[in-house]
Length: 207
Image (cartoon, rainbow, N blue to C red; front, top):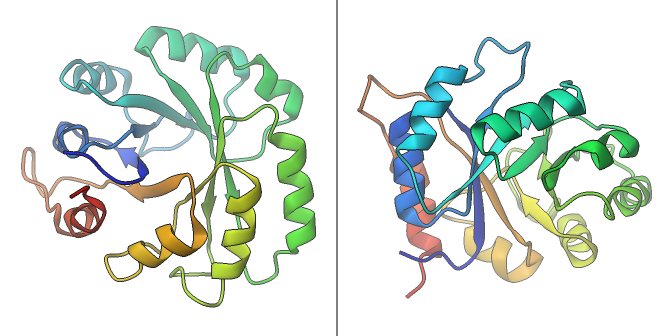
C-alpha cells in the first residue's frame, strides 16, 4: 500500500511491529539504541528483526552516545538514519556518517524566535527535525499555527498528538514533511494490538 505522507515509527522493539509497518508503507522504523535505557533493543534482537524486514529504512535512536560509537553501530547493523533524541553539538553531528533526524520539543513556554534560530543553525547538518511535546497532548488550534510556521521553513515531522480525527487537518494545514508515530510492546510474542496505528494509516492511505 502507499501512504500520502512520509511516516516514521519510533520505538520499534519487536518483529510484529517492524513487519506490520513495512507492509503498511512506512518509510522509516526507529529502534531505541540508547545505551543507558533499560528499554533499549538488544543487539541480537535488532539483528534478528532487521533480517526479517525489507522495503523500509532503519533508524537508530540515541541520546548521549559518542559519534564514533554511533558510526560503529550504524555500520554493524546497516542503519540508514540516526535519530538524536537530545541536542548534540553541531561538530558532533558532522562526525556522524548517516543522515541525522534531530528531535526537538515544543511546550507552552517555547519562544518561537529562539526555536527557529536554533533550527536555522542545525538545518545544514541534519536531514530533518521531528517535533515532540511534553505539554501538548494533541495537535489543535493552540499549536497549529506554530507548527505550520516550523514546517514552512524546515523539513519537519510532527511526532505528537496525532490521531485519526486530526491527521487530515495536520497534513493539509501544517503541510509537514511527514509524521512520527510510536510502536509499542507486544501483548505477548507474536500478538499485537495495531488498532491505533491502523486507524491513522487508514486515514492517510492513498486512494
